[in-house]
Amino acid sequence: MTIPSTVTLIDVGPRDGLQNEKQPVSAAVKIGLVHRLQAAGLRNIEVTSFVSPKWVPQMADNAEVMAGLQRQSGVRYSVLTPNMQGLEAALPSRPDEIVVFGAASEAFSQKNINCSIAQSMERFAPVVAAARAAGIAVRGAISCAVGCPYEGEVAPAQVAYLAGLMHAIGVQHVGVADTIGVGTPRKVQAALEAALQHFDLSAVSGHFHDTYGQALANTLAALELGIYQFDTSVAGLGGCPFAKGATGNVATEDVVYMLHGMGIDTGINLDALIEAGQFISDHLQRPSGSRAARALLARRH
Ligand code: HMG
Ligand code: MG
Image 1 (cartoon, rainbow, N blue to C red):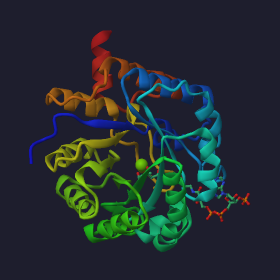
Image 2: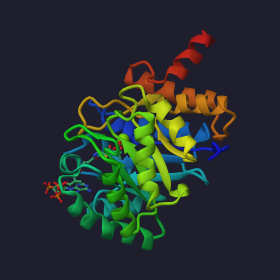
Image 3: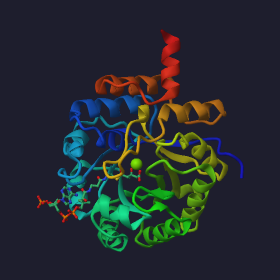
């Protein structure tokens, strides 16, 4: 397998990145972040989630954020919808893509979405059908594809099982997620290969949290399998409120720096992306989680 020459990044910072922030971030700042990301060349942006505001208060302004976007043609705006209530709330916002999110571990399914894996499929099936009938693309997230904060190591067979269930209900693309960042390259490859039993290469992406500093290595390992789509988070923002201690996704800036250094095209302007990361880091009053952004900014001063 040759390494892909073009890679598509989905910036999940506005959603995965900000969902974990304790202090409320205003809708205006979230909208400003999305605008900066699209100006930097991102063509896929995960904007928000239509989940219970009691569970994730930071995403309660979902409709307001979606309504405030100045949409750019060619950009795909996605939102998370865990059930029909979420989809119905999301539809007036006209997302281009919705994401149903399941887990390869039973315990995480319970903690994150309050139901078993089997029950989650019953909830997702009508969501997927209604979204597809409305012409909206459907992605599925497979959380804990390598390890679970409650159950420990997760076998690739569990990932294959979930991918098979998602395929059967009409999910078009799956993101293999290392929710807590415990994966190392060969284990991540095994999880991706498990998803590839049910989905084409064009329909599998990687979603690697960087808790243990493995995410760039895992990205490279995924590229070796030919995977060319990745979720990343500007400034390395993020985490999951239901996975204690898990840090953000791999920083978009770091992945772009690596890919461009390898001669791989992303369509992203790294300088403009660094500005987007600086905008949100300034707002959160925290240094960027991107090593590349910090290094490049230090050279400017
Ligand atoms: P539930 O309690 O089982 O749902 O929650 P329910 O149907 O029994 O309803 C209970 C209450 O929630 C009711 O309100 C509903 O109206 C409300 P009440 O009568 O008590 O006032 N409700 C909703 N409100 C707004 N939008 C909705 C909705 N559904 C029910 N869609 C539910 C089930 C999934 C909703 C809940 O567990 C939840 O919201 N969980 C949050 C999950 C979440 O957002 N997790 C973080 C995102 S996933 C992630 O980060 C992982 C990922 O990045 C990949 C990776 O890294 O692994 C994607
Ligand atoms: Mg995540």
